[in-house]
Image 1 (cartoon, rainbow, N blue to C red):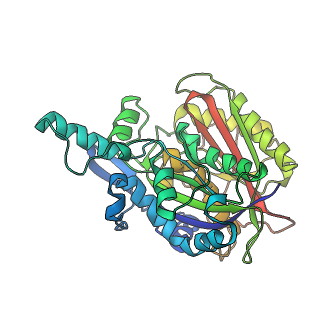
Image 2 (cartoon, helix red, strand yellow):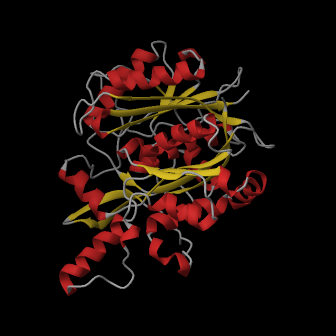
Amino acid sequence: MTAYLNALGLICSLGDSRATVARALFAGDASGMVIESGWVPERSLPVASVKVSLPEIARELGQQSSRNNQLLLAAQLQIDDDIQRAIQRYGRDRIGVILGTSTSGIDEASRGIAAYLRDNQFPGDYDYQQQELSAPANFLAVLLQLSGPAYVISTACTSSARALLSARRLLDMGLCDAVLCGGVDSLCKLTLNGFTSLEAVSAQRCNPFSCNRNGINIGEAAVLFLMTREASDDHSIALLGTGASSDAHHISAPEPSGRGAKQAMQQALDNAKLKPTDISYLNLHGTATQHNDAMESHAVQGIFPDGVPCSSTKPMSGHTLGAAGALEAAFCWLTLSSENAEQTLPPHVWDGQADTDLPALNWTGLSAPLLQDGPRRMMSNSFAFGGNNVSLIIGDGP
């Protein structure tokens, strides 16, 4: 069954609307990556933060008040008209909410615990519900008074890619007629310090697949799709194929040969009934760590021996962790949409110094054209701790 991605709301360091994000994305604009202090003791690090003011959460939902949910609310408001039309058409009990996150409201929880240790009591605005992993889906379901399935997937950096995969399954099984799906993660000290302790964070803008790469930059984002079985009146962009694997190689390091990554990519192609030569662009996981980029290079060469235009967009958006899979699927969506006025592909932003120990990939530069011969299909990769791998194929629906 074809699952159409009929509406998209998103906010990240590139902008707070489809139009602003698209302009920055296709221009290769990494100005949203800014060096800041205060996240990790005695270090200043590049982070891709959202700088605009976020909408306030209503007082009656105060127990769900967190920056994570504010980001999600900003994305939801962009597509509220589409959501209300879906409610009128399908009913509130036939619309699901499936989201991915890794942080939820842990930043508010961390501040609450710090206050408790200092004052022997929690601050007045602290509520345990803020930090539950289920908080984003609960918040959105209550906000919109939806009574369909509502849950959160938390598989680290594949969380929101898996949310899209799961949303499609709900439509396939007839449990929903529409699903709000995507992901959200906010910047917080816990994740910045955690990745720093793993020696995985770069002190400069990340440099994926370069011989000089030395780690990730972390960002924040919220992405929300409205997925249904029917195309919208404006376009027919769809989730055509999904693939997932779990190679369980190591708690944090990827399997070096890319075996699990190749399985996910091949499953996505098989699920979409496509060949590698049908893919016109690949959005790489591309974290700029030594091990991820090496593994992914081998995996891509294995699936695409004839090459495929590809790029990592993380130097612009940062690695948004639980939101990354949905955000990079959204970049593919934008590439196919009318927001892409010049019909170009997202460029690969790096220093241009290839790691000659890795298979050579076909990097997109500024203004690389989106080829228009036949249906347009794009793949997006997401790989996570524990050997959790997901590939999605976004393209023109039938």
